[in-house]
Image 1 (cartoon, rainbow, N blue to C red):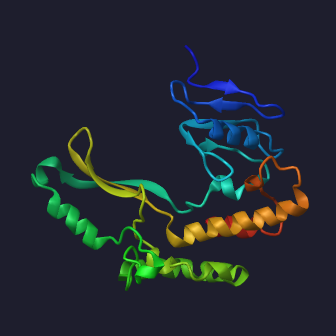
Image 2 (cartoon, rainbow, N blue to C red):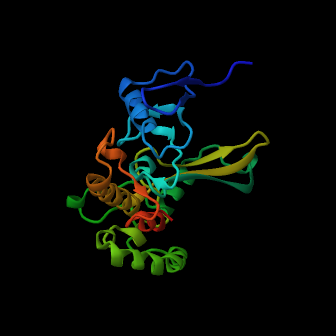
Length: 240
C-alpha cells in the first residue's frame, strides 16, 4: 500500500514529509518549508498538511517539532484560536424548517466580528461581559496580570472583553447534524486581541534575541527561544 505522503529533501535539511498528493503547493510555501527544515532545533522531520500555505516565516498547515526550543512565528499569532463541537439533546425533528430566528438569536448572544478603532466601540467585544464571562476571567486574571507586569504591552488588548466572543475572518458557529440526526454546535473561535498581541510581541522579542545568538537563521521570522533563554518561560506562560 503506498504511503499517503512523499518526502522532499532540501539541502542541509531534515526530511520534509508532504501530505499533499494531488494538491498544488505554492513555491513560496515550499521555500518556507525548506527554511524551517534547516533549523538546528528541528526534531527528525517536518510535515506539510494538504492545506499548507504561506505564513509568517513558517507555513500555515505544517507541523514543525522542535527540541528544547520554541519558534513563536511557527506557533503564529492565532493563539487561542481553536475548534470545539458540543453535542446537544436535540434532534433534527426539534429544529424549525427555517433556521433564521435561531441564527439571529446566536448573533445577538455572541459578539462577533471586529470594528476598526476609528469607528468607536468594538462591536465584536462585550460592552459589559456577562456573569459567566466574569467568573471565568477571575480564574485567569492573576496569571495574566503577573505576565503584564513583565510585558506591559499586553495589558491593553481587549482581553476580558473579548473572552467568549467569536472573532472575524473564517471563524464561525455552526448548527449541524450527525449521522443519527442529533444536533451539534460546532465552534471555530478566534484568537482575538490578546492572542494576536501575544504572538506579535514575542515574535519581535525572538527576532531581537536572534540578532545576538542566531545570526545564521535561514529567515529572521524563524527566530526561536531556546529552553532557559530569558523569554522562553514567559512565552510558554503567555500561550497557556
